[in-house]
Image 1 (cartoon, one colour):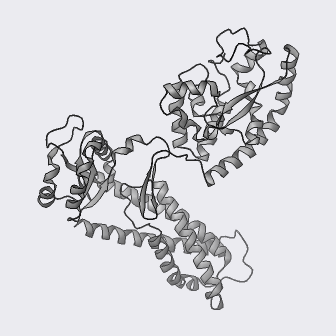
Image 2 (tube, rainbow, N blue to C red; image 1 turned 90 degrees about the vertical axis):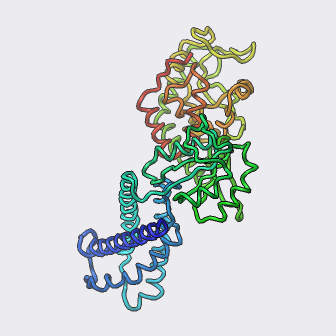
Image 3 (spheres, one colour; image 1 turned 30 degrees about the vertical axis):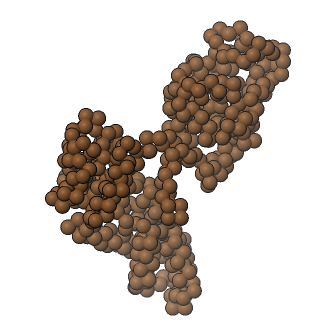
Length: 467
């Protein structure tokens, strides 16, 4: 019955996909020839010629969507943004195939307007994303009302089984209903707080007597020796099987699962800012650091003059800091303390610290001493946005006492960061800063960087915790 429903949903999606593709094609025709956006010089071809061309368009798009994974069930395995990515990729491939076909084969019988193809490429993506969003919403609403449900059995216990159950209970729109759990003892587990149907040994009987569509194997580490027996029983059934390994508790940032030549690999920690993302962020840093240097150059000249005028020593101050992958660099700041202020060794500044100059106290309170770091960003030592860099002498202490501290160095350090806009800067909780830094790394996007920059600039530079 469930398989029949799955096939029906797939047919439903195909029909709607092709309908919206047809709408995009028709709209592209009318935009080109009747909107008046760009004048038509060679006359308007009859609509029937373009309409019958859908016979070519439909199979290309269907195959692109099918091969692109857009008809694979995504009930609880992917975010909407992932489906949008699949749509963009499938439509891009399909439009390239269509263009190739048009100019290699079809041009002899029908000269298709380049602007029609351009409009169609954009509209097919936009309408496709809109259509899929609406369909997913309808399906979620149907599942919330108790229709089109999958019935799930959890095989496992302890925290991992509890976490699985809690996530599915919260997301009723997934349409997955928990019927119970099998654990080692068959006795109610207060840690998991799950309805117990029996022991692991009862799996075969439970599968044969109850309606179960999906089994989630969520064994605690101490029960992993039973996995081969459990998988043998499941291999003799037709239920969907998913495994949640207990090692997920060790995932910190950038956790992922990937296929490595047919071998599933679970990544526990990895930077989310690599590959193309690294270069996007680097270009972002170069462009905006140049803009900010131009904007703030008059202010920096005035500050440099005041620092030089009010105390002995250079205008700028260099200090070793740690950045990406533990590499060190010389951070550039306006000097805010008296010359040779660390003769006795490095130390934190304190309230009313007599080593801080008068102009330095003002610069620190408004973070203006940080402006020269724009040149560090331009050089590539730092990023505009990221965890604030710390001195190696303090890092050795922090890494011993604060779990996951070193993970903040999976990305370049920044002039400002998520922790700073949340108020965790200066003399505040290191633990809270680390929590914000890891959240930033895990959820990085160029739009997140823009948001942090916007809040930094327009919510003020004032730092009440700076000494």
